[in-house]
Image (cartoon, rainbow, N blue to C red; front, side):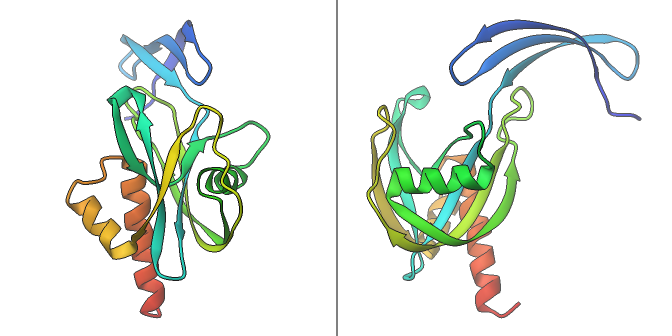
Length: 183
């Protein structure tokens, strides 16, 4: 098995501010054709920033698609001309006012690989200091500090439905535990 699909034709369906939607015709490895709907997204970043008291910084914000307030780690979409790490540092500062140090990558996440090409880059850092929070003009967030152990419990108890936050919290907790045990 080659496990590959060759793109035969692409039709643009929608060109938005953040996403682009296209409808592709592909050739499957058995020679048959199939249709694929794809959402193109510039990608995102998420930062698990920990305080000296072992608390993670979270933001609460209204998320329109769900019509509810969602608890998340600081995150945002990638801006052109910046690396994912530079984007992460910018988002952390904008949303929380925090400046991190000793950034460590926690890898990348494909949130919905069945139809969306978004890749979210995950980072962990220690908070160095705080400056002025300055969210985007259309962004309203409240910042919360949640102890790392409590955040893990919240993920395991389904109190945090956001996928990128779940993964980053669990990876950060594993990393902290491993570091504390001298592994």
